[in-house]
Length: 142
Image (cartoon, rainbow, N blue to C red; front, side, top):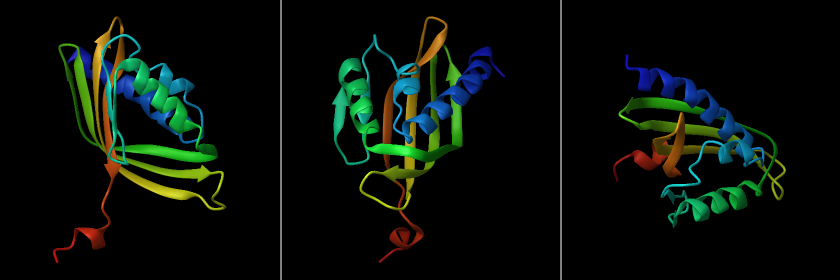
C-alpha cells in the first residue's frame, strides 16, 4: 500500500467526523478539510452547482445552518485511491438529520463522489458530487 493511500485512509476518519458535525449544523470541521486556495466545485443533491473555493465553502456554511443538533452520518466507501497528490472516494453517505421544521429525524441516503488534492501536508476536498440514492422500488424496470 502506498504512503499516499495510507495517509488518505487516516485523513478519511477526519473527513467522516466533519460530515457528522455538518449534519448537526456545524460546518467548522468541514472548513478544515476543504480547499480555501485552489479551485473547487460542488454538485449538490438538488441538481445545482457552485464553483470557486470561496463560493463552495460559503454554500457549505449556508447549507449547514438548516441542520439541527442530534444528527448522525457515516460513509460506506465502495472504493478509494490516492496517488501522486490526488485522492478520491466513492460510495454512500447515510445520515439521519434533524431540521427545525421537522419533529422527526429525516433519513438521507446519498451517492457521493469526492476528489481531494494534496495541499502542503494535508488533503483538501476540491470536488463533491452528491445526489439521492434511488430506493429499490425506484430502481425496478417499468
